[in-house]
Length: 516
Image (cartoon, rainbow, N blue to C red; front, side, top):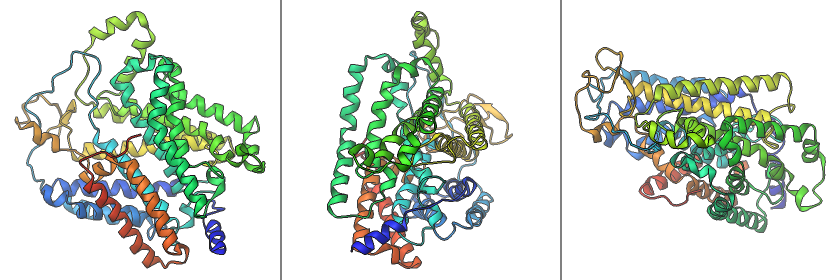
């Protein structure tokens, strides 16, 4: 058993990863599968297109194939998904025209809009969670290429981006309370901190429980990932607390700027104040040094969450400029009363504008990443230390893929709450009040552009499913020697595992179990 434990630890250690371009191509299966699903959904009745088994085949299986048999040929997989998509587009849609509500949604008298679920964000978060859930088990089998496993110190891989994307995604939804009540930023710290600590305490408890269980059953560990006792749950629980401490800065500065400043400060500590040398070379002789990776990377993950928060303030409200206007009003106390009555909140989604702003940020983050690579800031991308290059890579990757989901949504569906849509006859952009659209039932309109019900179910209980996936991964690893399993048998196990998790999500779609 000890020999297998050592072999298993070596099996997932000392990886150097792949390339950013390759990771983007592997991940493109997610966008291609949504394109296929959208074409399928718009041409077949819901009882067929939304059936959970059909959804698994279209939305889950391509992700699994992308990280196993098609890792070295991701373009081939994308083409295999695009081919049926193109054929489906030749078939007429179920509806001859775009269905829109009878009237334009009424505007509220206040300044705070209702934060409606945004289909593209729901799809992105669910797909990100699915890829994470699949990878944490798949990495234990040889069918999962080693270049997609977490890098030892420097490098990029699918699992490296998965960790950062999880934090970025949590940052997006952390924008909801601020958007609902912007004055939350101005509340005294002593009022907010106890509430946040109480909400995150179950996650801390999960982290401690995981440590006890892993040590108790002598489960194979990778110490250089987070440390001897630290784990991802502890990082996840501490980030909301640290974010609250930065509310005074968020009140006065753009959130993206705060995130970048935190990332730069973290890189300074790594490069000029010896933190990188401490992480890489100091022996584990104390409780601090034993968990040096988890402690040292915490500020880097905070920067990632802040950049996720910034993205959330752009994509969640109907207008991408809404939070900036609220921020300006709060920072200028004298204008607060005037602004609270001057402009009604926007309830029509401005998806075109959101896509443009998001594109600008994607270009910005990719450009910054290119500059840091050119100047060799922090040597290379490092998830282990969550350095500046890693922070920028996570931000660029996630912003780009959210933009991709929004563009797919705009191509296949016209949102009933969008300020402008495309006429089904002239193909020209017109207002929702235009007579080009017949009056229809609002409930029918709401169905258009909704996220796939399976992904909606996964997003609803994402954290609970992540915990379940961790438990299932542990049980499978204790039941069989995964690293000696044939590729075909391993793939069968992974299909059963992924479909099982999906079916559990489907069964629990009517209620939320855990919320961070």
